[in-house]
Length: 298
Image (cartoon, rainbow, N blue to C red; front, top):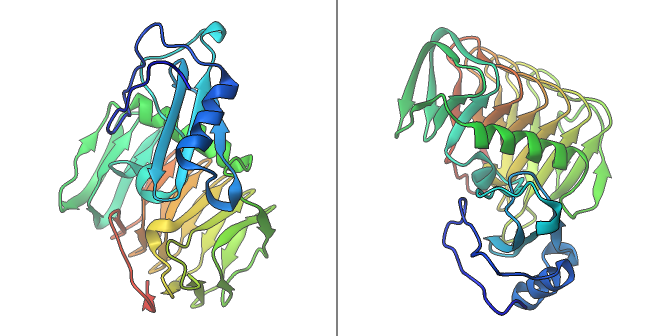
């Protein structure tokens, strides 16, 4: 343990005091001493961009924490901190929608609930939309844009400390228990089908779906959340694009390697984070702060 330490509340822009030094081994040992192993007995460790020099032990939420270490000798230290968290509310921050190039709202007015719409380094947000329960347009979000790139890359590489289960490309009609699932290519579900997420009555069940390429939901597809499953604990990490069919309702946040397209009257319970464009064809909606109880249909 270092001789001097600081506890910073909400430390997104935390900076260690000069002269505080600790080795990498001591940093990770301190993390285990403070909180013990995270889920599945694995301590999440790593060196990410935008991390100041030093040792940072971060409690994400109950049962989950990470240790971040960067050696001052490595240089290129920054004053601002931004870790890598794959779960929805921390991952999204205040953004319901964020793109790197453009956000386009076509056709009938789309609805953004509980969050902001941002673009960076692009500046184009066009079309008709409305905010519900707050929200704003944000055109200067370089740190968050970098955070999306880093988090997406880390998730695609499997840096979240859980074992993976191989999954089929077509998931319509399938029931999933909490866990991390990966398709080497795409994830699809067919017209009119329901995907069930069964929380197995766990205290905080989490579902991670990773696709090497795309997520495509056909028209009129839905999710059934049961036994404690919540949309806020569902994440879709995609190598390329996501396309939501007309009237498709999707549980969870989407991190796309390229674009996200919302079909007519489609709805996402989470946030939409794209590394190119986000397009709403007509009347789509995103609900950021969303909680669903047992046996509810999205």
